Image 1 (cartoon, rainbow, N blue to C red):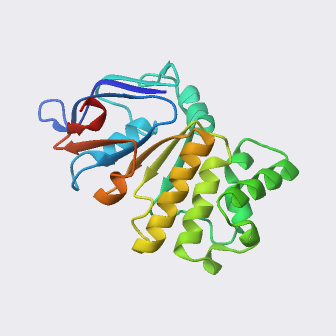
Image 2 (image 1 turned 30 degrees about the horizontal axis):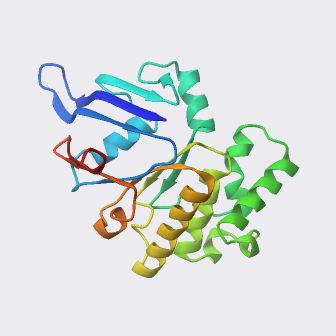
Length: 226
């Protein structure tokens, strides 16, 4: 599903580069639930941006679903982002004037899917995350946990193969965070989704199939290699 080989990333001028990632190598099989952990400034966000095709590595190779994407065309990366990847963020990023189902349906709107199908698929996904009765509510009428469920439904509605979750429980209290984590685990098992989740919460990371710890731009622990 995903393979990174010797990936490095640096910023700044060539004569004075600032390395952020150094020789990152790992692969994920279909259906893996992987936590990426590490302190602030360790390189986690840069790693997620590279996996999510929002940034390109300075060195190394990234293969996603059998495609070498590190030097793929803008058209190919845009298609992969829209059809293969789903994104979940700490801050939800819901549009306040849209209802829950309209927010969920946005990826399908970008695909020019017909409205009736958009609504049907959005309602189905809201049902799968336990929010069928909140379909016509706007974000301001939802709790933090409900907003994250809407965001998760939006990530899933395009039927991606890989979900990238960046601190999805960071804005939630501990009870709600555990509920969202349980939902992610259930969707991982039931739908066979591959999930990469950045988290500072070691207890949540311990519930994942695999844990990769990053420090100073390097992988210092990979439980798959233990």
